[in-house]
Length: 363
Image (cartoon, rainbow, N blue to C red; front, top):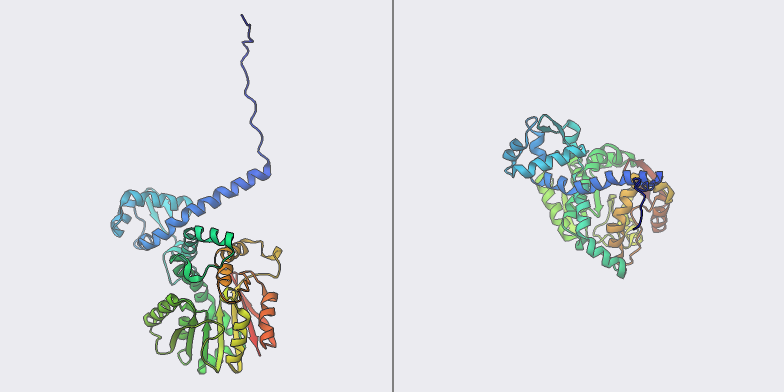
């Protein structure tokens, strides 16, 4: 018979988690929560939940479901998740949006409207297998190959910034641009996408004529629809055309909004812009905010743009002729190396915002 010690055994202490690991895990909890919440935000906009929540004061889940024709039990969970995220407010079984939350989630004409960013993020998940294949093969992924949510998401994301800055800050920063536009100028908007920038300029400057160009036919169709809805079709045209060979001459102003780095041949585009400008004309280039080194871009804004560059911008450029692949964080110095050789003697930073740099190029 074997004698055993009847003293209670003590479990070994759990290994201590290093402080750096604890900090990383703590940050990841918040970030994974944000990732999980993104589909709910997009659904909330499409189902009209945000708009209904912004109207008429605090609501119960049953009242919100009734107002939107949705299933109360799902709405209750949706509200709880959004309240936990801090995107909606809750007290005593009722939920509501504060004014700043309504601007971000419920008002598509707000300069703070952020739904487009969530739609873009969801489209990236939808494209995961396509991008995995591209990583292995090195092939490009054209703009037309992405999930359809991307186009609307990008248009909405950038439009918010254009609403806030385009006519108030950016155009006034280009020497003589506002005066020329008020008199009546001929403008080409290259890489116009859904036409948000073109339409906003046309609304502000009715004496000028605007010509939007984009190689993506689906975007051009949406841009024409946007111009009709805004009542500016009498002074705006949209055509399918590549940046390196868009039609027309004698443009007083050429604009490129968040698009130069996406082009397969930005140097060819720069040469075409130079040849299309009227004497005294200018090229306004709006690009994502970026420094000239990786270290300068290791920040929250740079993070967003590097992700977009990995999954959208760089593959899009590789899919086109030349495939220079500047990337969304090219920076002012690298952009000048693209623009100046085309015959632009003047190249300067005209304005800066939290998400963009505005550059002015002149022959």
